[in-house]
Image 1 (cartoon, helix red, strand yellow):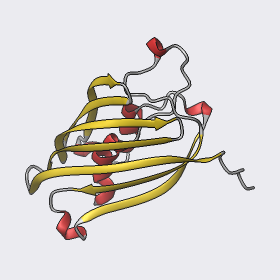
Image 2 (tube, rainbow, N blue to C red):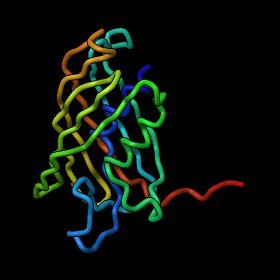
Image 3 (tube, one colour):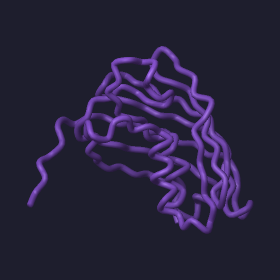
Length: 166
């Protein structure tokens, strides 16, 4: 069940890898990050999480390539919600993106079985290190469980992507 909550959490978590030199053409929810292998980690507290041990913690590695540019928060949300059966009607939208000196603030609204709103901040420390923090409210399955949502995440570039085997 937690994998279906990840669209809500990771929408706030995952930023983009872009290579735009003309800032006017970059999507509002994009950060200028270098392509390569990235280590991602997040801790997420969700309503009803006591059933799952309290706080969800996940870490993984992903390879972001130049071919993936632009990789926006919204594009990731769309990809993640594809994992939820279409008939459940899960939809998430990143909106109200406001640039700041070190990244951007944004809002995330999700409808469907995992519904809620969150306010988030994406911080770019460098082209190789980012952090995302978000807080809001989340309701599961029409209110079966509801309450505060909190997520803290970080990502750091490890280097170039490993060579593919085979």
